[in-house]
Length: 255
Image 1 (tube, rainbow, N blue to C red):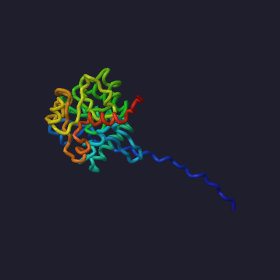
Image 2: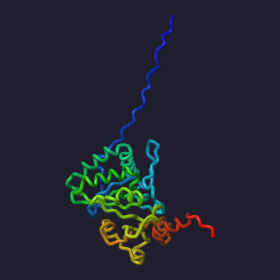
Image 3: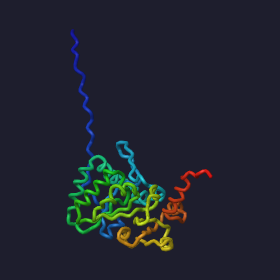
Image 4: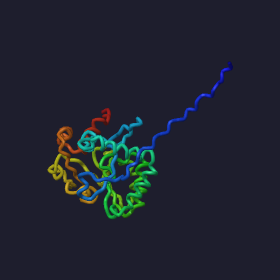
């Protein structure tokens, strides 16, 4: 009996599952809802995605990572973390699709004349991602946008030469690029309390988050009342804390 040789079975590569997209991209956290501010958010500092990728969402973070409010409390709830990771996957894997969906969402009358805070956690982690936001801002001039950021070098290159008229930002102390800040930059610092803000000659934004970009500068932010974080701050502001760390890392010149 002659054996019949059958061709080997065709092995098709597994299709990558297309991630599920949120129906709405913008939300309102408990602090911003009272002011009618909408926000977009990413995981704080970094995230390990389900496919094994580890992505830094705050590349310029410094001491702020040791007392980051967005790494505590409700931000650690599984459903919240899942939503933030889904947002990150969207901009990583389909930035063009995300940009189209965001532009369509921002066309809704609810946002006209309103404010969107870009990131209540996370930061502008890449040039492509920041550029996508800048295009959106130019495309939706009826909406105002604002952000805190530690990405000083990236903003110097991509934002400061020709910023959208509807975009306001503040450089927040506590990052590895603090030393690049210059006189005239709008800056914010986190202080142990309101008394420390006043003593330093800063102006508190406690009454409204929009004071960070619209109020008098420099801007002071009172620290959240989380015992472990306050202990780490040890009475210092983020600017002071980061300066101490930078000084320790700077090699001393031989005499």
